[in-house]
Amino acid sequence: MLHVPVLLSEVLEFSQPREGEHLLDCTFGRGGYSSAFLQKDCQVTGIDRDPYAEEEAQKFHKDFPDLFGFKLSPFSRIGEMFPPQSFDIILFDIGVSSPQLDDGKRGFSFNKNGPLDMRMGSEQEGGKTAADLVNSLSEKDLADIFFYYGEEKAAKKYARLICERRISKPFETTLDLADFIKENAASRSRGRSKIHPATLVFQALRIVVNDELNEFAVALEACKTLLRPGGRLVMVTFHSLEDRIAKQFAKENSFVPKISKYGKDDITDHINYFEFLNKKPVTASPEEIKSNPRASSAKLRALKRTMKT
Image 1 (tube, rainbow, N blue to C red):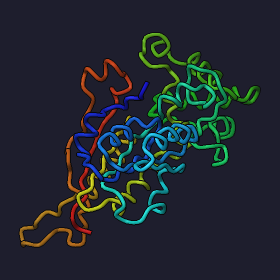
Image 2 (image 1 turned 90 degrees about the vertical axis):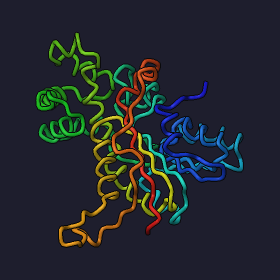
Image 3 (image 1 turned 90 degrees about the horizontal axis):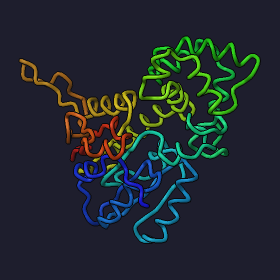
Image 4 (image 1 turned 45 degrees about the horizontal axis):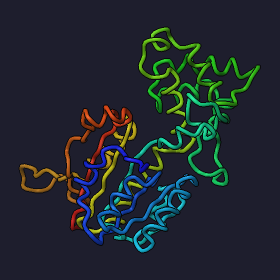
């Protein structure tokens, strides 16, 4: 069954795809968005660092040999992979995908056992695993990660307990860490909370393992040159840190200098790269959230590339 991504109708509404236009799908995943654009007779280039996404892309090569292409890479490299003004639409869907969560061997899920890995890329890409971080970082560094990247209120407590436990038994599997956090969570988190007590800790580790926030920020900067005049940039995020980057990027690059009382621009050297397509983020409808609870935290921001360089 075809994967239906979150906010699909809204993504199409703001991107306004036209026949012959070129989309860069920076988070290909299972190809839900790409499929919708291919149905509009757009040319599509998919990017993903996950080798499992490359396997899915082979089906698209077969069905759309003249319209679809794929590159296995972190999307932070798009600025060096393509020449300026290559695309009419650039799309981001930031966060972990359902296939990654569903496969226990990937190490993202706190509900399925597997190695405590969390790397989105291939093993050849290298980098530290979540187990490496949990078993080697100082108590302070772990607490900072849990607090800043997971916004976990009990960050210091979990960091201290993890450092005490790993002396006798290092953490190696997802369920080992998830169950340990659940056992040490406050009673209200164990029993009455709608989310698993380990959710925010796992989120924080995943973000750091994959350098997700920096990857996103670097890729957004590249969009300023990769989009053609009039091109659209659509960003779908799932938690506050990602949305903050999207919001700040939009604000800084769509700023219109105020006219001072002396009739001169307050900022004369600012380049207005984008126009806002929506000032406030778009969220999922109650109907979509009911059918896909993951959509409840999704926010969409969209920008249009100005005609200026």
